[in-house]
Image 1 (cartoon, one colour):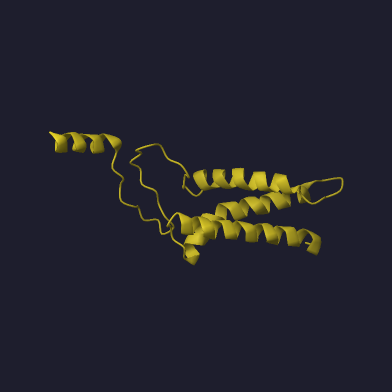
Image 2 (cartoon, rainbow, N blue to C red):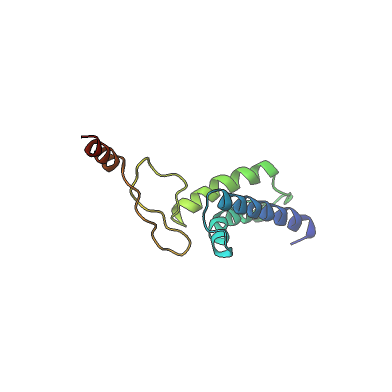
Length: 126
């Protein structure tokens, strides 16, 4: 891989790392190395695929990928990988009692459903 191809790839991987670190700090998730690697992995895979796609062309010039295509592909494919491969959906339904798994694979405590909260409120008022 030439320097001309390697530099944009490394910069994109570094940008994903910065966004993952900011995101883990803002959402109070695991900010250790393991947590950052677990959150960033699907997006780093997507960046690598976006940069590697032009190299698979059988004929014609193998130009550098368009920056907006890389960004769009990274976001979309990263979210798809995160949901289906890494089993970490970014958004769940309102009141969904299904716990998320964090990087250690341990289940977090169950959230209270809306129904049980409303029943508890009615019981407390009566």
